[in-house]
Every structure is written in structure tokens, then in C-alpha cells.
Amino acid sequence: MYLLSISLVFCLFNLICNESASEHAKAKLQETPRPIVLHSTILHSTDVNVTDAVFQSKDGGHIWEDISASLPEKALVDGFFVGNSEVYLRFKNAIYHSKISKTTPKWQKDSGLNDLGASIAFNRSGVIAFNYGGKIYQKIDITGTWVPIYTNFTKNQVNTVFETPLGTLFIGCNDGLYKSIDKGQTWKQVRNYGWMMKIVESGGILVATGEQGIMRSVDNGENWDWVISEGGVGIDVALIDGGFAAITYNTTSKSRRMRISLNGGKTWDAIDSGIEASESISSIRQMGKYFFCGHPKGILRSSDMGKTWQLVRPSIGKKVFNIYVSGSVLYAVPRDFGC
Figure (tube, one colour):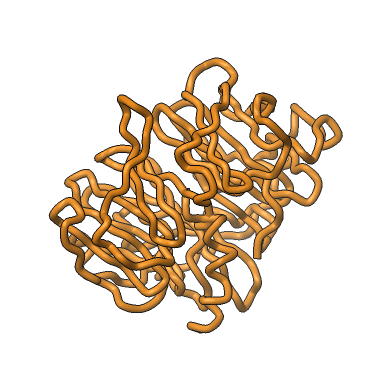
């Protein structure tokens, strides 16, 4: 299992860490599977080119606009990162950013992060850039420049940099998880095996993706328990109203499962009984009353907590959409089918 996890981590890194890539409940859902509802009242796959890089919807997924026009060239985005007021994207190691607004984004290249292959984290203390090699920077808002931080952290193979609302720092690496309670002056390894890729927090409860599924901590990251573990790996975790959503990959069935928890991550219920099984489900996000997920068929939306799903944006060729949310704005980035 450990060797399998190491072989998957490079593929999962670009998919989950943003950000990107981000999947056994104590009780399985016993309801009869429902057929997927495929009502598409908008675009057809022939309406767009396979080179279109980023789409945006401001009306809950009904209409999708290509917002990659001001990028210098068309290419598949290999990193996309959304905050409350800014959005960043990466391709070919170059970083571009734009303000989030009701108008079409105007992308600007961030020359301070050239050739780093950086990922972006929107933390309590500010905007953080980090790469797999262990370089970590913070953006200075006034000047727009990036300065090195956490320079005494000497590990590489960094997958995530996360800060809780109370200021506790976590850095997830391929060899476990590191924690700091003094703003990065000193670090303690709280998990010494296996990778961690993405962490979210709600009400003092931490939930994270790992090499055996989904983990949970109720003591500020000192101890972790597997809450979903089914012979696979954790693909994605996200916050939803009143709880958490997660995607895991089952290496036996070769498929990904979507689940939600409304009791602090103690138990999880499947929300994908009406969706065709796939090993390429990319993300699960909530905006208002809707859940959205990326599936090989396209972007699916549910208004009933995952009981039924509607296709609102068909796929582009052999791509699957990663979904991102900021306020009332949805973003969708087509990516090659992952492992």
C-alpha cells in the first residue's frame, strides 16, 4: 500500500494540492441507485475548443463564460487557486492572477514567482506561495512582492501549507505532517509517515486527505484518525454548510466516491448513488443550495444534497472539470483524466 501511495502522489499533487487533487464510511448508504438526470439546457461540447482553459459562471452554473481570453496563450492550466478576492492560475510554471469581480477577469503575470512551479494558499496571515521543493513565500500586499517565510523549515516534498483560524500552522509533506504554534519559528512533526495533501477546518475539527483515505483531528492536529479508509487514497476535502465533503479513490473498484459528513466528520454518507461510477471524479463543491462536481460527463449539479444530479456543462473532449467557488462565482478548469 505504501509503495502504491508513493507512485500515486505525483499525479495527485497537481490535482489536489490547491489549491488541485485532493477520497469508508462507518455505514454505507443502502438506498436503491437512482438514474442520473441529464438535462442540459445550455452549451454543447461542439460550442467550445478543447484549448479553452478557464470557465466562469455567475448564475449558479446555467451559463459558462470562457475567461481565458486575456492569457498570453491557450494551454491546460495545471494549477488553479481561488481566494475571497483573488484568483491565481499556473501553467508552464508561470503564475497569473486576477481580482474576483462581476466583470471578465484581466490576467496579469506575477513575475515574482517565475519558474517556481508554485501553488497558492490563502491563509489567515495572507497569501502564501509554496512549491514541492520546499520554498515558501508570503505576498506583501502593499508592494505585491514575495518574501521568503518559514525559512527554518528545511523539508522538501511540500504538498500543502495550511493555517487554522487561531493561527496554528501545518505543512503537509510526503513523510507526514508538521505543526507550528509560534508562527513558524519552531516545528513539530505530528505525523511521521505517509503523505498529506489537503486540509480544511470547521468548528475546531480538522479533516485532511491522506494516503489511506480521509483523516480527522479534534485536538488541533496533534492526533489523527482515519474516518474514511477503503483501500484507496484521499482525493479531495471541502467545507459545506454544516460539515465536510470528501472524495476518495478505491484501488480495488477503480472508482472514486463522494461523501458528506454533517456531524463533524464522525460518519459519512455517500451522495453519488445517482452518478455513473468513475475513477475521474475531480471535485465536490457547494454554492448556496447547490452541490457541484466534476465528472467525465461534464459539470454536474444537485439541489437535493446529492440524491439526483443534473448536467449543466458538458465535458470538453477527454477532459474533466475541476470546480472552484468564491462567493457567488463558480470556476471550472478542464484537465486531462487523472489516475
